[in-house]
Image 1 (cartoon, helix red, strand yellow):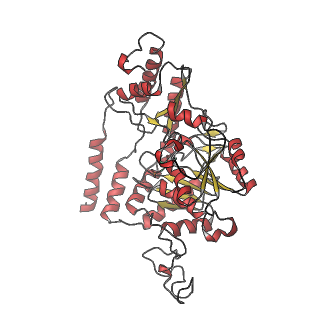
Image 2: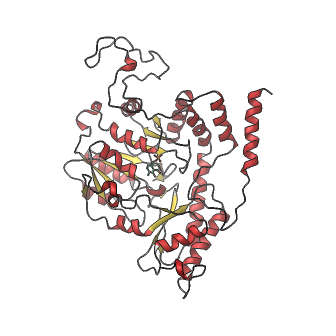
Image 3: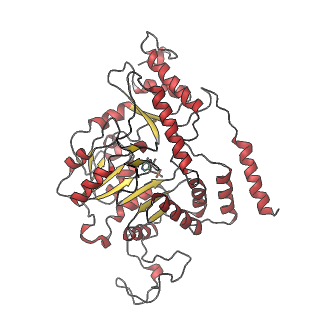
Length: 445
Ligand SMILES: Cc1ncc(COP(=O)(O)O)c(C=O)c1O
């Protein structure tokens, strides 16, 4: 055995030695999300590190091809985060190559008020005007009716996330977009593996985005990607990601494009090195081969991860079915979500508030999370943004005050799920009596 094999073998053993962890109810934290990393993941990263694959290269390309194939799409462009993927997707729609249909400052883009900030921020960063719509409290997604009602003379695109993995009615909204000449971006960061009408989310829009942050369906550490079936769009994404350059050769390549010294662009001299010609106002949002190595390894288990998320969600849903005072989540009709989390909303008739239940669960080491920003417009950063609100944001406000979610990620076992069910049930049924079971008076509202 050579030194390298020995080293990698020891890393594998180290993982096995670390892996065993016993669940002790009320002591071991049940995280809301987390990466599921095994010995293959560790050795994949170690091998990439031994090869010093510290920038984007062959592994990043391999991962891009394999990930695009998983979706049946032509191109995936890796980025350093899901937020960067959203920034690139929106900015791509402003590119001059798109001609008359490109988005221009002041154009309107429909989006949901309840969700994650970086679904919306790229609109503001590009001088576009968000048009906020409300959500359906049953699915935490907006509806085609709300989107249609929000369309105005300057509305040019729709950007929506599949909330907590639950698909928004994407076929209908894509059809609306086609009818009204609007672009559609699916923020698929929380929904890898979800299907709507038996088709994967992320394959309906002009562009879709994914996050590979450890909380998500599979991880590269930090990371994300933009998906598209359109080669022109893919080219723009790549240019914007890679400093805005015109050339599509990789940094280490010379003249694969065949245009290195034989063209004239802009007002540059003829033959100016194509490597350093810029056709977009770009960024550098690339990832590294170290991350891609982890992505390639994780990808082999993505289907298992999604199956486990579905299993955990179903077990929680069945275990809590019929519970009083809480609205339990519903999959969007015609969908099969690859869930990101399990949302619960405290109903108006409840004798307790969200904070009481959340404190109780957290006290039992069950991690809870809010539905991201709740109503984004309630946050300090958004108090004076240029925007339009279509209809009321009543449900977004209700969610901001009354909704939270718990984990279904693959690291959660049946034993943990059953403990979560028992804890929620114990808290809620306790409120039927004079003193809630397991709740001190100080914890009551
Ligand atoms: C819907 C949604 N979009 C975008 C993001 C941003 O992803 P990242 O953390 O990789 O930037 C997240 C993060 O959780 C998200 O939930």
